[in-house]
Length: 263
Image (cartoon, rainbow, N blue to C red; front, side):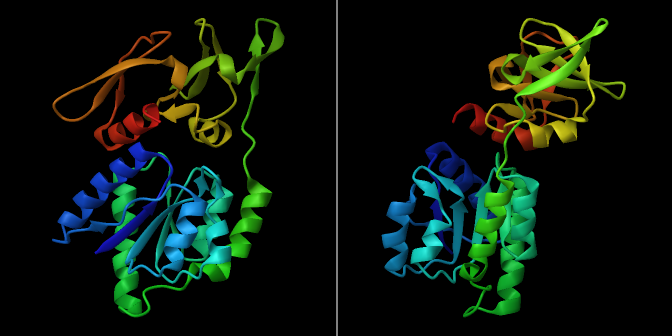
């Protein structure tokens, strides 16, 4: 099975290859990888050479622009799995048009699910026509991205004693949930309740700055001091200011956290 990955972060490429290898091993399939490409300008001439590709993994945001620009220059009939950090509205466009996606940081179980979808489509459409060409829907996707490109929250209004104050997101260490209340903790250890769930905060906070560690914690990159792994692959994460309980990242998210910290 011949696979091309177009991604501008080398650590993400290596991690993706490891996850693909693990998933395909269950099917006794040995993947063959083309040399990964990291930009629109390198991808266009390569794809114009009509390489024999079974599956394409394509990052949306490349170093020199949106990878959708590739489809303006090259007709691609190869099935595509997008990798993206765009918000849920753009993702819905991919779902509506039967283009699969992986939301960054990539979860191993979701990557395996995407590959299962590829094999199901292959069985339905056959070897010669594995899936509808994505070019047909690119204009719709571009329009959706342009309308919904995310502007992330920069401040939170909180109650302090008898008054209100605005907390810059840049001074937030982490958010955590306790007894159905979500708390904002600043880098200097101050604590305020906020009127958001952690799920809502995930859509409001920049994924470049914040990571959902588990069901209770979302942490800013500056708050993560160090971590250690146990024999089961879980991570014990030390964050600052130190909470009263241990913060544990499950095995299924451990790899994604390492990739996120190693960008």
